[in-house]
Length: 33
Image 1 (cartoon, helix red, strand yellow):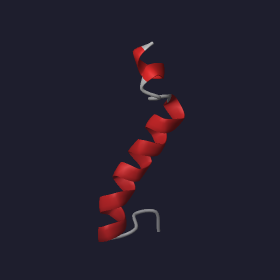
Image 2 (cartoon, helix red, strand yellow):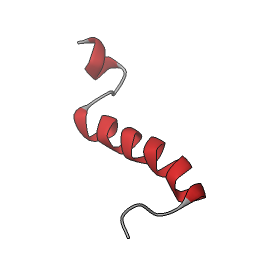
Image 3 (cartoon, one colour):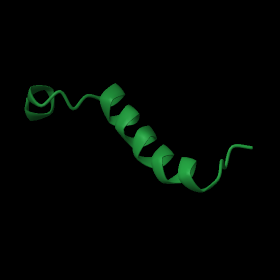
Image 4 (cartoon, helix red, strand yellow):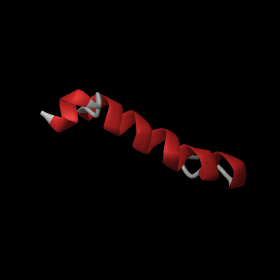
């Protein structure tokens, strides 16, 4: 399908979301501590 064609799978999506959220957070302050 379209999603598989672009390689936009669930693991890739989760990794993209995590990196997208970790960018600004890491620059400001760690929220997990």
